Length: 380
Image: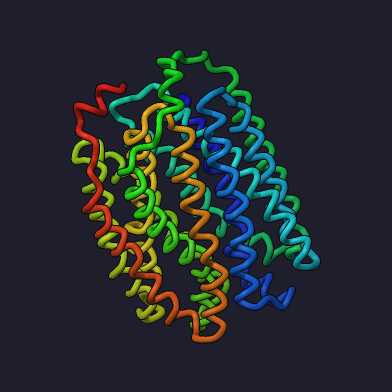
């Protein structure tokens, strides 16, 4: 039940957080934004999120803060619903920063709750939780684009109402559950140094996240630049993310049986050819290429979080913040130079280079010494 509720919370938080990318073609036209500005806006939101997550995760390791899994999504819902009303870049910046804070509050708190009981199906549970975010992000374009097209950008604040209602229901059900009593984290473990091998894992995740952030941010723009409609751009983004959710679930399950490193490296190695196919394929093949590219690009995410938890037991809040926050934040920072380079050399050539990052990450994972099953079981 708890995993199901966290799935819903993740879907709401990331679903509303996903409003920005599909609305970009409309915001570019309305506010006369350059691709450099678009990249900077994406960077600001993700950087706000990522810079706060490690500190909040460290706090969670020392003192439980379950209320963060409710407060965070509420901030995200309110801020992102008002994006369509932004009259200038400054207002847009303020809204994206508030949404970034909301996401930073939610992710490490929720991820720590997912693996609190150290279940042997941790990969599957984390994949289920992660799929909630991917499903929410995938459904966002299908909700916000038709709404903005039918009723105009200025009326998007009305979308806050269903989001707030879902959060209220989620909070009441979560509060009504009997508290589980997971084994207490040893105080010494919460202060133990993070092992050196974690930084190999983190670097690979950061490279994969950079590619995933860039493609999910510019996917709709790539489609419209090639003559597709805003609707097709939103559909391609939804396809990218829905496929990611499906493959994440499969990858998490497989990683419980075959190891985290093998599944992450395999999926990332397969991501590069399909991302390249999306960039070069005829319009008729955009959706299949987006599905395969998104599936293999995002499959690593929940597996990487569980691998980080197993690598540094007792520091799950901190490493969740580093993996889900800082690694994705670095990816967000790169949106600004990617946008700047795209203004000068074209978006497709720049994204062609970005498409090779998952392959580099897969190669790096070959040097990651995965903890043995005996050692992982020993910390359960």
